[in-house]
Length: 116
Image (cartoon, rainbow, N blue to C red; front, side, top):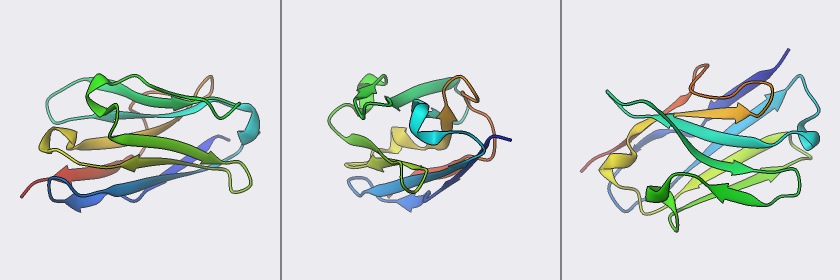
């Protein structure tokens, strides 16, 4: 079955960086578009970024453009989200998604907390 295991979250001060990882299994990773969602306290689920089979990417959340990066390693069945210049409003649980299989704010996620 589809398994997505997120890791790499934690606490960071404003301006710092974190890299999130998502280890995927149970499906042909190289043939599936992947992405990240997040849910901040008291807010809805937000699509942050997507990376397509080609390696092209799209940042759906305006607030992260220019600060976040997304990449994938098909050899490791892993997708990454690089979080740079973190802001307190980036505080959220971040969820990995495999589009067409499992998407949205589902599963364990990884908590990112940004505060001074």
